[in-house]
Length: 257
Image 1 (tube, rainbow, N blue to C red):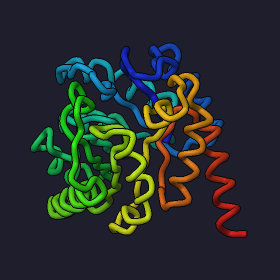
Image 2: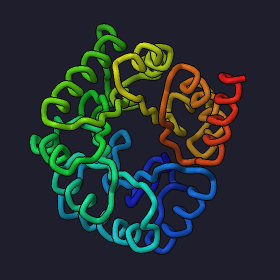
Image 3: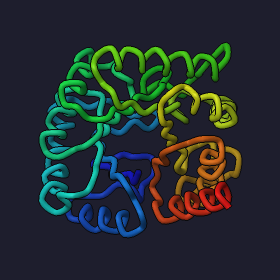
């Protein structure tokens, strides 16, 4: 899953692109081996200030129109917490809804996704983007994240959503120690009955250990992506598609040879 940010404030500066650059960025990700493009109009980086519904639509719909005209056969997902944005994006060709709130932000989300008949990615997150990294606290992070994902997946199934993907939410209300505990526990999470997506790309759990910045974190990201794949991850959400695809190919060869 390649990341396409229609936002002015994503934490990785190189991923911020305007409309004129988006065609080239999407084409490059597809040529590098992306299976899915994830488009978001609201930044969820630590400390991000929430935006209104209309502003999110104003950012997302032009990109959706671009995708439907320039890349009509490409699978893409809409990264949003709002049912209205999900509905609008699917109406313009989105194939998946990726919701960092797992339906807890907008009570209409689960029903709308079920009505739209598209797969749903639900993520664990403690707190809100603006404050989630101030003091994340858990009694047992793996058990609590697994319980949350299990409960939200059950509610999604009861709402009528058959295709569900789980995301443990690396970096969303979690310390570096919490993140590595979840990475070690990936075999547990992959046995919850649904595919697991991981978003490790250039995050603090790389930079805090290596003393790097997001711009310098590609090598560390590739290492963690490899560990995640070996531990059962099904989808990698990344800024750097070529390197992630190489990790997938090498792990697949290692696992089947």
